[in-house]
Length: 91
Image 1: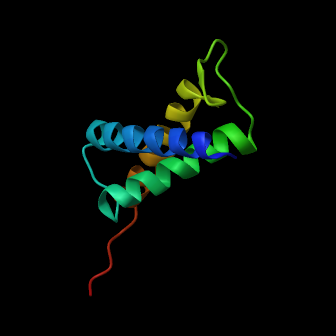
Image 2: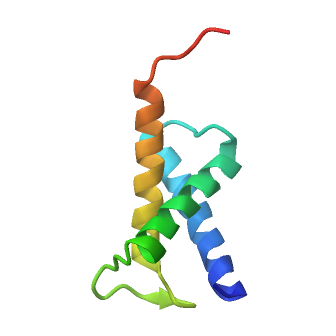
Image 3: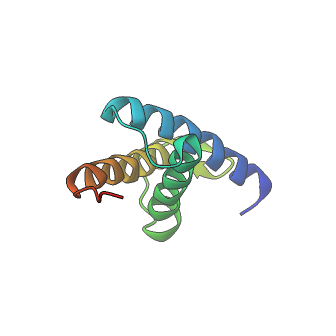
């Protein structure tokens, strides 16, 4: 991965994190940093591990944009739904 791909990953992760938080109506632990890290995990899984690419997906610095956004949003939504489903522990 070169610097251009890393910058694209970070920008897409930030965008997807903000959009996913608004869609679900909840924030991840860690605020924006938590959103970006979870989105980066989703992008990495979709693009680099599973090698899933939406047909006709535009690339920016070798990163398929729509696929990256879908992967990031998927992980963020799953994280928030899982956090809501688990019981909270009292301190």
